[in-house]
Amino acid sequence: MENKISIGRASELLGVSKDTLRRWDKAKKLESFPRTEIVKHRYYKREDVDELIKKANIFKLGWSWSSDEKGFEPYSGYYCSDFSIFNARLQRFGNELSHLQGLESIYPLITAMVGEIGNNSFDHNIGNWADIPGIFFAYDLSRKTIVLADRGQGILKTLKRVKPELETPSQALYVAFTEIVTGRAPEQRGNGLKFVRRNIEKSGVKLFFQTGNAQLRLSERKKDLNIEEVSDFIRGCIAKIEF
Image (cartoon, rainbow, N blue to C red; front, side, top):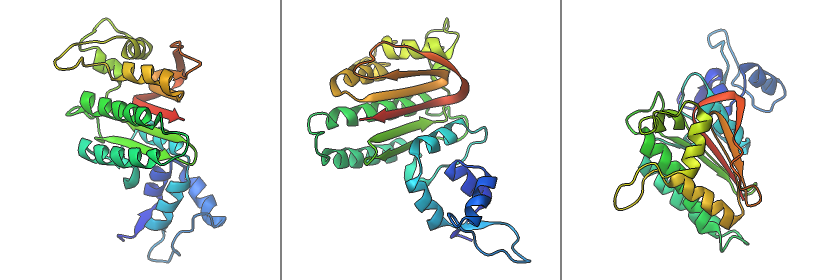
């Protein structure tokens, strides 16, 4: 069944319930293989699932993956299991972005911001991933959207090692975007998200970022760190960049 995906796995990859998949089957949006007396469960063609993933809302996919209680490997086209894979895809992303009209002056800044967010995930979680290592990295240039997510420790747990007085994800998120926590030659570490914040002001892009139950939104017009506590909780981090 190498070319077949179970309904459970398809549900995980697409970020929808099994009941939704059953409705899609009836509506012929995503048809399963015919069931028989021997094979009673629903299975889908891998290429059909992959094609639907490419058309899906990438933020919804990233959110579903990062917030799910049970870890699973996401769609391979959006999954960077290690830094070398992420770096290769980042270079490809930057090249594709450079060919879009109107972004000649800011595409290097956008690429650099994506690199900093992805690097943060690997730098702060390497050897400490809770279940699935690596990050979710997807972009839709037609919708001018980029999404990165991880199932790591989250900013609070990471920063408490050097700032044990931090108590909430909101406090940690504020520190992550405003303070340089440590210094180490030849560069100051802990500066990645501050770099992202500065470049938002230069590039005019919008950023959504969440860790734990704390989320913020930044843009050229909205420079203040208005961090909001929400009911939805994620263990790691998720970021959406819109340009």
